[in-house]
Amino acid sequence: EKGGHDWFMLKEIAEQPQAVADTLLGRLGEDGRLVLDEVRLPDQDLRDIDKVFVVSCGTSYHAGLIAKYAIEHWTRIPVEVEVASEFRYRDPVLDRSTLVVVISQSGETMDTLMALRHARDQKARTLAICNVNGSTIPRESDAVLYTHAGPEIAVASTKSFLAQIVACYLVGLFLAQIRGIKYADEVAAIVEDIRGLPQAVEQVLAQMEPVRALGRTLADADTILFLGRHVGFPVALEGALKLKELAYIHAEGFAAGELKHGPIALIDEGTPVVVVVPSPRSRESVHGKVVSNIQEVRARGARTIVIAEEGDDDVLPYADHVIRVPRTPTLLAPIVTTVPLQVLACEIADCRGYDVDQPRNLAKSVTVE
Ligand code: M6R
Image 1 (cartoon, rainbow, N blue to C red):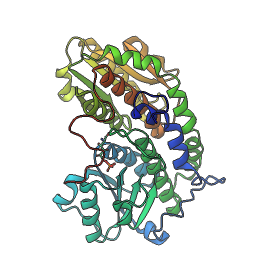
Image 2 (cartoon, rainbow, N blue to C red):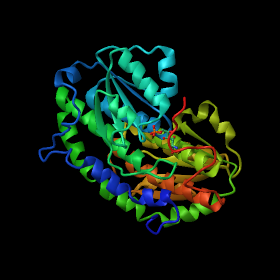
Image 3 (tube, rainbow, N blue to C red):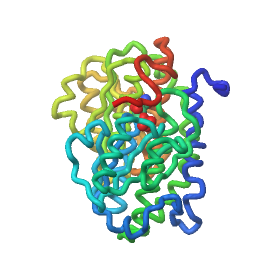
Image 4 (cartoon, helix red, strand yellow):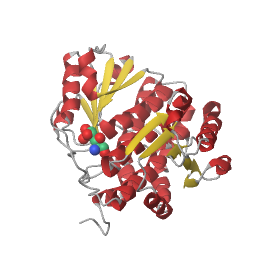
C-alpha cells in the first residue's frame, strides 16, 4: 500500500509530479489561456473584485503566502493572507467586491470553515481550493477549484501543498486573464513555464539520496533555522513546520532580511541554517542579498545548508552543503525548493525513530476550533 516506500509521506512526496500534472490537467488551454469553467463566479463579479483575502491554516496557510506574491504581481489586486483562526475575530473589512480564497486539503478544517462562514455573512465572494471532493468547505463556497493530488494519508501535507500552490497560480492567472492586464506577455510565458513544472519536480526527486544522507547527519540537532526571501520565505516557514511536526525539533523560518533585526543572535557554533536562495535572475538582486546572509551566518559559526539553482556558483564559498534545484522562474520556484525540505524533515524524523506518518499530538484533519 505504501508502494515500496517506508512511509506514506515518502510515497506522497514521490507522487508530486503527478499531483502537479493532474492539478493542471485540462486547465491550460493550447493558446495559453486558462480554462477554469468550474469557477462559477460571473466574469463581471471577478472584474469588480478590488481585494483578495487568502485564509487557511498550517501548510495551507503557507500556500496562501506564496499566492500573495503571484496574484498581486499578475493582477495588481491587493492580497492579504491570514491564518483562519485569527481572521474572523478581528472584524476584517469585507464586502461584495472582496474575494475570499480559502485553502484546505481536507475541506473540513473547522477554523477555515468558520472563517469562510464569516466571509459569506459579510457578503464576500468565496472560492475554495480543496483536495477532497464534496467536503464541507467546497460545499459552502460560491466556487471551488479542486486540487487533484489524490488521497493524502500522511498527517504531514506534501503533495497537496504543491497542488495548492499550482491552484493558486491558476487563480492568479485566471483573474489576470479575465480582467485584462498589462503583463499579458509575461502571463502567456508563465503558462508555458507552468507546463514544465511536473518535470522539474521529477528532476528534484531524482537527486534526493544526498539529501537523505544529509538528514541523517542532522538528527541530533536541537534547533534548525530556515531562511528565505520573496517566495522563498513561505518555503522556509514550511520547511520549519515540517521539521517541528515530524522530528519534534525546534525550528523557525525567517525572512532572510530580518536576520539582522534579531534572529542572528541565535546563531551559535554548528547551528544548522537552511537557506532557500532565490534565482540569480530574481528582481532587484535579492539573490545577492541572500548570498550575503549565508556569508553572515557562516561567519558566526552556522553550518549552512543551501538550496540553490543549478549553475548558481555564487553560493559555493559559503555553503557547507548545496542542494541543487532546476532553473525555474522566480514565482514558480517554491514548487521545486519545497521538495528537499520535505525529504529532509522525513529523514530526520525517521532517523530519530518517530512515526513519520502519525506524529504525536496531531490529526490529519482538525475539526475543532
Ligand atoms: O486540511 P487543511 O489543509 O485545512 O489542513 C490545514 C492544516 O491543519 C495542515 O496543513 C497541517 O498544518 C499539516 N499537518 C501540515 O503538514
